[in-house]
Length: 128
Image (cartoon, rainbow, N blue to C red; front, side, top):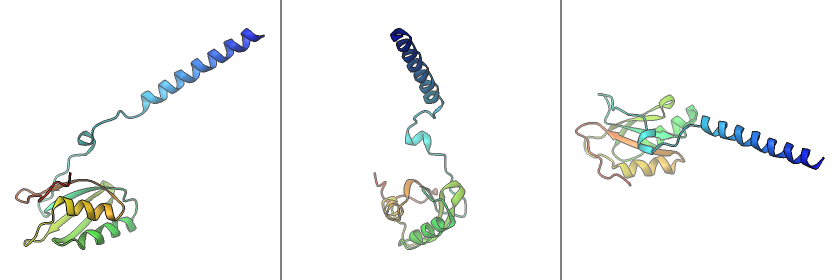
């Protein structure tokens, strides 16, 4: 009787390990942040695009818009909720640095991923 129980236990462990291996193989592979970030292009009518994670609803979008429009140098923020992007129109007099934009996003409780500035616009700091 004892050997039968031992055989059953070993077989059960083998099946569990095989199922776990299969489940792990189906998970997405780990990629670097650079590879994970989709390519972002700044529209001709904008000065910068921010990638922001964590916005799930229209209230989140409105909060992000309000927070970013309070940043000195940001004239208008348009949130693209489905893409998790915020399109910015910046002031001609002052361009906020990437670090300032990062701090505004994170202080609102969201994850700042990247900032892409239009050609001719330069980030005044990477924040990294």
